[in-house]
Each structure stands twice: as structure tokens, then as C-alpha cells.
Image 1: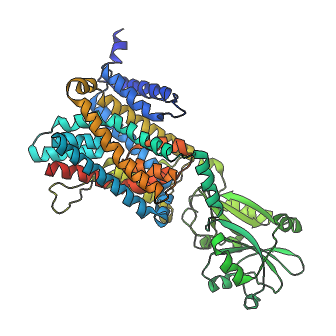
Image 2: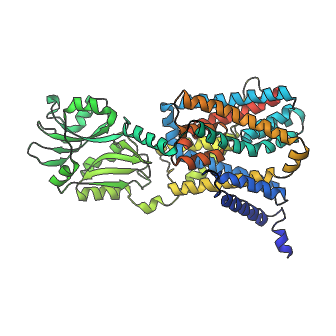
Image 3: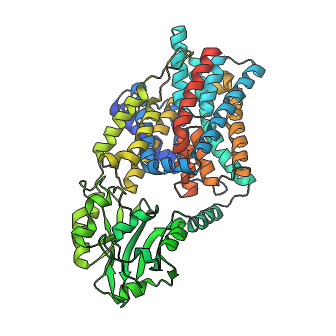
Length: 555
């Protein structure tokens, strides 16, 4: 029986794995519990870990620290890869505003902590620990501990105790605030999703297919590749119906004839300019175009060959090589106009028009092997993580601050993932992974992280609350958590008309809180919370770390 006891005694790999597995299993089982239709989701793993640790079922400190940080790295890296392109495009759609809101939350939280310190007389070390726990920011805790040790030559356990006491309610407080804002504004998730769908229908960036009569005499006799430079708008002429009714595939060298009808793919917002440039719109019935020429087919093909990754459509010369036209490119569920300068990525879906033979040849040229997309590209993933850790370890010296600031093991990989997701294909890096693979990595990462935080915080947790004055610290942490989020959340939704899904990601990201993001994602069932989370996360992480160091230095 000794071997069974050893499996639950801290000190070995097998024991650590068993405890992590049991903690995650218990937490996920409890996550099925719903109160009022609402569940805390994976956050239950944290409380399962606290319960196990309270009863002496912990794991080796070194193993715990490694697994916690590695789980967090996996989580933030997968988030970055998922929302990288949306992160950069979001700056054109209010990303600066979101970061200003996030900075406001950080500043309000620091001011709230300083007020509590002045009113109650609590030590500076304790309030910094409580602040880091209240906003669930582990790097801020580490920065505070390191700064204090550098100043005084020894660590102060009060910082970590304040963090441990405030953290659990910090997680709940963030999620509570999301639920509270949803309640006071009477937000219906289905109605919010319907609003997004309505906005998408009116989206000027949406690609549309229009039939236009060629009425501009200046275009008659010109080749398609020649007229593209006449107007600063992206469009693709897919097919040409000649005056005699004959339908032909439109290639770059196709010559336009008077009286022809052109099938044009464009963005909705460009329609007025392009229709004025070519001619008037006529009723468009897609079946007529398909029926009149049985030799012309339309098909979607997948980019799966690594040699195609990062190449532009003009580089591939589909029209000359296969006598086909690429009308649009679907990337991550978004339709893009197939402009010549558009660089393809692994996983792109091309809508092509041409003869069956030409389409089949083009499909073979770019891969079109669904099986290939099921194979995860681990090289770019772990290379990106390594570069991210290097970036996160670089010290940034700020004038007037004796200790350098670092992005940390979470901030560095996140930033690299965002960059690789958006710019990797331009450097011929294959960064594609299936949605299911990305989700699996993300869920494993957040589960390991929460389990370790719970197992670490549970030791002496009850004793601190009951006998160490920690009960009032919980209240301080709750105030620091709820007031800034509620204030900025109210202002953002009421006066700046942020949609609720974006607001959830903003509030979770401003606290760098993965459990709140997981709750937001499960509630929204779309990527908007993840995009806004990733938009504000890098700046927020920097501000959280910097503010923790400054408070230790000046308090």
C-alpha cells in the first residue's frame, strides 16, 4: 500500500501528474453546475486546486511553477495565433480607444488601492499583493517581489499572501462584473448576436457579386489588366457575356467589347465608384450565368502547399497558366477580394471560375489536400514560443526607475504570436493550425495554469483568512476589482456604444485574466471577446508590471 500513499505525497512526477489530472477533472465536473443559467466554467479548476491544497494534497514547488508558467504560455500563444489578424485590423476599428479604456482601468485600480492604503493604514507590500491578486496579474506579483528583494535583499511573504487571498475573489469579481453589466443593461446575448449579423450585412467590406453593362466607351477595346490602373479600387471581373450571349471566363488579357455584360466581384463599399466607372447595374441571376455555358464551373479550392504560402495571386498567374479566374479568397471565415497583391496563406479557400480541366489543374497546383491541414505545424509554434520567451525576458530600462521592466513569460509569447499570425505568411512561415487544434492547446494551457494557481494558493489559505486578518483583505481586493471595471464598463457601453462582446474582452484583458476570457468566449460564442482581449493585453500587461514596481519603489 506504500506505493499508493507515495502517489499522493508531494515530490515525484507521477504524483504531480495525478494531482493535476484530478484537480482538472474535479474542476471540469463542477463547471457543469449552473446557477441562474450561468456557470463559472473552467474557473472551478482554481477552486478545486485550493481545496486539494488545503487538505495537504499539493505538488512539488518546482514542478508546480514550471507547469503553471508553461500552461499560461500555451494559452496566451494560442490566443495570439487565433486573433492575430483581427488584432491588427482592430486598430483601424477602434483599437486605440480600447487601449485607452484599458489604461483607464489600470489607473483607476491603482488609485483605488492607494486610497484603501491611506484609509486603512495597511502596509505597502500587502496592498501591492492585494492589487496584483485582485486583477489576477501574476507577472505584476513577480515584478513586485523581485523589486522588493532587490531593494531590501530579501523577499517579503506578505506580498504573496495578499495576492493569494485576493486572487480567487478577483477571478469571481471580474466575471461578476461582466454578469452585473449584462444585468443592469438588460443585454440579451441572442439579440446582441443578431445586431452583429445586421451590421455585417451592411458592412462596406463585404464582397458582393454584381452584373454591370459596359457603358463606358473609354474601356471598349481595352484589356482587363489595362483598366485596373484606371481606378483606385479593388475588383475582379469574373466572366464576360458578349453581345451574342456567349459567356467566357475573364482573364487578364481579355478584351472588352461594346455591349458586353461583366460579372464583377468587389467590396460593397466600392460599388458606387466601380459601377460609375464601368456602367449601370443590371439584374443578376447566378443560375443564368452558370446555365448558359456548361463548360464554365465555379469551385472552392484550398491552399495547402507550403510553397504557395506567402505568394501573391499575381505571382501565381492563374489566368495564363490555367485559364481560370480567382474571384475571392476566404480567410478565417472572411471573404476578401482577390486583388493581384493579395498574399495567400495556408488554409485560404479560393473561389475560382474556369473550365473543369483548368480548375482541377489549379487545385493540384496549390494543394487542395484537406488531410494536409489536419497536420499541426509544431515547428512554427515552438519556434514562436521560444522567440516570445526571449522577447519577454528582455529588460527595458525606464528613466527614473531603478529596476528594468520585462514583458514576462506571458506578454512576450503573446506579442510574438500576434506578429506571426499576421505577418508570418509574408515571411513564408507556415503558421496555420486547425481551429480544433488551437482550441485543444488553449484549453490544456488554461486548465494547467488554473490547477497550479489553486494548488499553490491553497496552503494556509483558510488560516490566513481566519487568523491572519486576511478576511478584510478579501474585501479590499473585491473593491479594487469591481469599482474600476464597473465604472469603465458602464461608460464604455452607455456613452461610447461598445458592443457587449467587445466590452467583455476589454474588461478581461485589462485584468489579464484568462478565466474571464474563457467565460466571455463561452458566453459570446464568437471571437469578439478574444480579439479585444488580445488588443489590450500587451499594453495592459506592461502597465500592470510597471505599476506594481512603482508602488513597491514609492511605498
